[in-house]
Image (cartoon, rainbow, N blue to C red; front, top):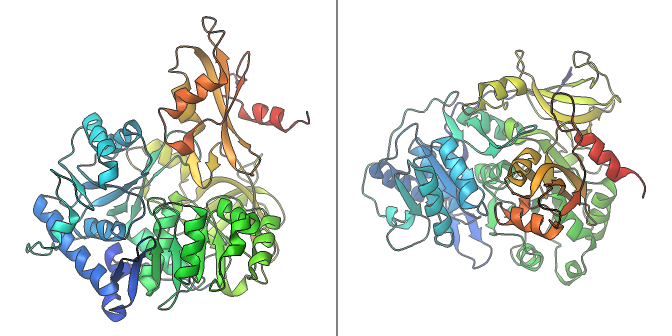
Length: 526
C-alpha cells in the first residue's frame, strides 16, 4: 500500500458554497470572475451577495432541499453564481454538457429526477425539448434573459429571505456530474459537500493560488476537472478566474496576453497547440508561471516541447476521475522542475493507493510493477445514483475504488499511468462510452452488429472508430451514412470519426465484445 507523504487534512464539514466563498468578505473588491470576451467583472463581494440573492429567489420559486437542479450552460461568469445559489437553496446540481442533444439531456434529467433547469437563451430550445422528453420539470430558468422565462438576473432584486437549509456535508449531495465510470452508459456520480470540499483542502498545499494569481477557465465548468481546478479551487483562495465560453486558439492566446494569466489548467490538445501552432509566437505569454495538464494522458515529449517553447518549468500533470471528486495525484507547483518526465504526480494528502496485479487482483505490486490503480480516501464518491450494483463493482467492501487505469509507481512515489483497463474513449478530455455508441448504431436499420474502440488520429487524439456489420438488406451502407446517423444524435465530441465494415464482431462466449482484438488489428503494421 502506498500512502501520501503529506500531512493529513481534516474533513471539511461545510457546504460547498461556504467552503469556497467563506473568505469572500476578506477578498472583498478583488476581481473574482472576469468575462474573457467583454471584460465584465464580478468582485468577491458581488459573487457572495449575488449568489445569496439568487438562492433566495430559487427558494421563493420552490426549490427545496433534496431537489436536483440541472445547470446547462457553457462557461460564463454567471455559472458559479448559479451553482452556489442552488446548493445554498439545498439543491444538488447536475451539470449538463452544453452541446448535449435534447435526447441526451432528457435522459440525464430523467435519470437524475431533476425538477429545475437553469440554462442560457441560446440553448433554450434544447432545454425545452429535453424537459418535454423527461417530464417532471417545474420550471426552466435562464442566466441571461428570454421571453417567458424567469432570469437569475431578476432574482438579484429578490427581497425574499435568504434560505437557511440544514445541510449535512457528509451525506447531502452537492454535485451530480455524469460519468461512464470504467464502462457502460453515463451514470450520476454522487459527490457530497464534504467530499468536494475536502478534496479542495487536499489539493491546496500543492497547487497554491491567491490574490494576484489569474487562471484562465477555458475547460468547461460542467466537467469535474473544470469545476474543481477552474472554479472551486481558485475562488476558495482569492485568485481571479478569467472565463472563456469555448476554446478558440486566438481568443485563448489573446486572453492569456491581455489578462496577464499566471496559471493554466488544460488538457493535452491545448498543450499540443501551445507546443506547435505558429499563432503562439504572435502573443506575449510571459505572464505565465505554470501549466498543469489533466483529463487525459500527456506525452512526455510533448510536455517538454511546450515548456521549452514558452520558457516555463516543465508542464505538470494531475490525475483523478469524476468518482474521486476528482483529484488523487498532482505534480506540486514547487516540484515541477524535479518531477520525472511523464509522471502524473504524487498522492495528495490523506489518500492511499494500491497497485494490484491484472492477472491476480488480490496481489499487491511494488514500485516499478504495473497493475490496476486502486484509491482510498475521503474524496471517494458516495456512489452512483440509483445504481447500487455499479457502485459495488467500483468500490469494494474495504473502500478501495477500482479506477480501471493501469500504472506503476517509482521508488520516489511518482505515479505513471501507462494504459487503461477500462474501455472508455477519452476524446480531448471528454468521456465517450463505446457501449452508448454501440447501442445507438444498432438502432440503424442497416446495421446488424457494431463495436466501437478508440484509435489515435493524426493529432494524437483518441477518437471513436466503429466496426460495423451490415444487414444483408443494406449492402450499400456507406461510412458517410453511418457517421451522419450518429452525428445527428449525439454531442459533437461523441461522433464516430472512422468506420470499418467487418463480417462479424469478435465476442467472448458470454457475449462481451472483445475490443482488445479490434485494437490489436489497428496496431498491427500495415
